[in-house]
Image (cartoon, rainbow, N blue to C red; front, side, top):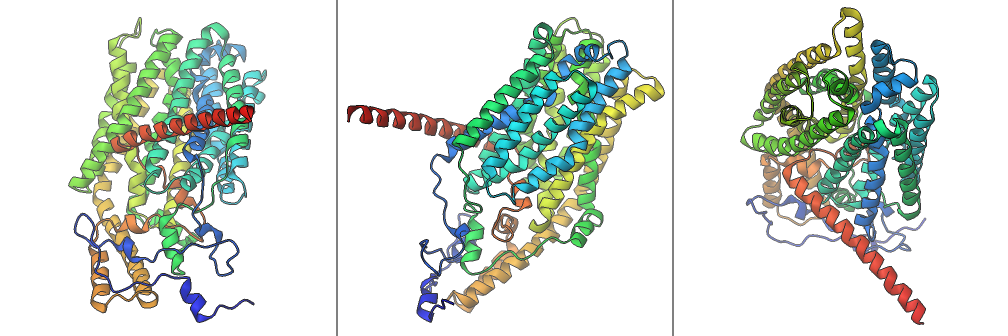
Amino acid sequence: GNELNEHEKTANYVHFEQTPLITNKRGRIDTGDLAPQLPVYHANDLSSPPTSLSKPSIEGHHAQAFLLSLAFFALWTPQNLLAPNLTQAAVEFGYGNDTVARDLYLGSNLALASSVLSLPFSGCIGFASDAVSSRKVLISLTALVGGLSAIGTAMANTYPQLIFARFVNGACMSGSVPVVFSLLSDWFDDEERNAASSGFTAMMGAGIILGQIFAGCTGPSYGWRFSFFVSGFLTILLAVLVMGCLRDPERGGKEKVLREMMAIGRKYDRKLTWGQFVSAMTNHSSNCLLMLQGFFSNIPWGIMFVFLNDCLSQEMGLSVEAATFIVGIFGIGCATGGILGGYLGQLATGADRKFLPIFMAVSTFFGIGPFVALLGGHSYNRAGWLPCLYSFSGGCIASLPSVNIRPCIINCNPPEIRGAALTTANLIINLARGAGPSCLTSMISIWGVSRVDGFNILVTVFWTITAIQLALLSKTLPVDQDKMEKELASYAISAITNIGNDYCSLSHDDCNTVQNELFSRSDIGSYCGDTTVDGDISLFSIENQSLSFDATAAKQSLRFMSGALREIRGGLLSNQYNERNLQSS
């Protein structure tokens, strides 16, 4: 019922005056400066836009993100806790004298329960991050249940209790990822998200590797259950701290493009339909290849997560501690390969877009050698330089292509499909990793091969197929990326044209110049790719935050962690100062 007069309507917009076009450092027109800026709104202003447009005033968000990353670290520690002491646990559950039953029940079946069967529940947690009013409560409860399930694993006396506890734990670990990145995307703007995403990704990987090392070091002395107790109590403690100290950020408050589009009354109105999704997954050559390689490449990774540590200690003659050390070296190699792969991937893309899939294909194929050498040679008496070299090089080379897969998916899909495409890729990856141990145990039972021979055969076959698929991607990816960029350019032109018609006084020639510039821009996807649907964080904007972990992101991550520690130190000093003032008064 409250209608605004023309003067009040006009007061809510900032009109453009006749000004020359602004160019960026590369001499191209900076289209970001053509959108009108938002005025300052007040809560009691009836003409104010939705609250998602207001800039969130979150103090200490680095410190809050650091606390959440610690909880994220603890939540992921149970992932591989059983691997170093698989045989010890098998003895307690009655499978010690039957290696086939050990690998089946404690290897493949537990992996299927935690990685595959739990996917519907972890998906519900992820989708709930877009629906619940408090994501702080959601991530706190997820971490709390994850900690309780880790303790439940340690207290399991029967196999059904064990597999149920691992099922719940797997759902909490996988379900926490979209919730964490949803919070992250509302704490940090687009200039900080890559650094923050890299930091959270590093904390997740560190939780998996350090948890496995801790279990390997304490298992022979304190038993396999001890590490699950420590992980569970640590996760519960951090869940309580997150519930008490974290504050929910405002949804969409850090989306720059969202504020600019909504300032002129426009939204990104292209929404995903089931027909579009099916067409993108079946008729899109690059998507088909990327999804298929995700399955074939992750079968061996699933086997490594479950059996590598136990295989080194049982078949290769190493002690549990030495085998765990080798796995730790493997983790360092994976981290190195992730950083190096992102950097080399950027160089390959800068030279020619078709070089990136070729680089991934070559590195995938050459990653077979170190694993075959590690498990196919003679037995080791200790963790000497040779097994360490094989382990480090295997982790490094095998990780070179993996960090470039998500950018490929994003680069060839428009925004309304990216979330569904990335989610589908994640489901396929988890499915493959859960099925990997079953493939190995099936080979052992059907053909009677040893665990070492079966592992080497599966790595060689599946990664060779993956390398062929990635080589074919070099033909399809540039074509599909060009097609997608043309679609985004058309949408951007339409938006800029509407700005010119409604709120802008640029001359006709200048507006034509803007349109021609949009067509010629090679980075048009970066201008349109971060928009969201209906003013909230959608699935694609959650997934979009974890793209790659390159050298630049690694440096930014260090600055991010440094900023978090400075904020925490400043907060402690401020509290001490306030307490002294209270005492003196």
